[in-house]
Length: 242
Image (cartoon, rainbow, N blue to C red; front, side):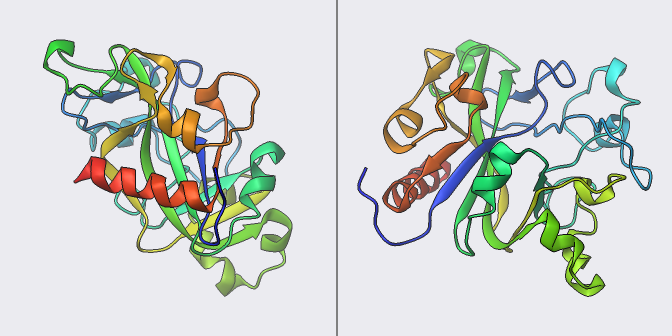
């Protein structure tokens, strides 16, 4: 890849999986999907929504055994149930460090592993049988604040992050907070990162465009895109979703 001046991008894995809470969100044969957050595992300053609260607003049934669990609504998308802003926080240094280097105008992509719900024979050709990794949304970065800097902000400057899941934790634990502009969105159709041959098989968006972090299964890693790759990825996403 040849870097050029311009926005860069990072893609990070989010959402429910077979470890937390033990189920993935669904993708349907036509490429539509449901974003399902992970459970909230830390104490919070106030009550937070549960999977039961989401269940009434989603198009599929959350397994009954999870309904009483509180959810960690992060990332938050303005168009998602019980959310009103685009914010993301992270307490892990391995991701917080690169995220803290994003500039306004850069792109933060979110991807999740999703299980096919429905007839595989009726699925479009890019939906992976079984499970696969897919881009589900993006932030056009408007503001990035380290956790340390956030705690020194005046009350009015903190307001845009007030409902972020890490801000609701007691104690606050984010090492970085990211706010997306109004150009951010939760997609209506997923964009595949896995090849149709299987979830563990990365497609060209990963193998050709990204410079990933290199350790562990690729579908759990941070994927980095330089300026040239970001332009190409953005074009692919737009074409795929048109």
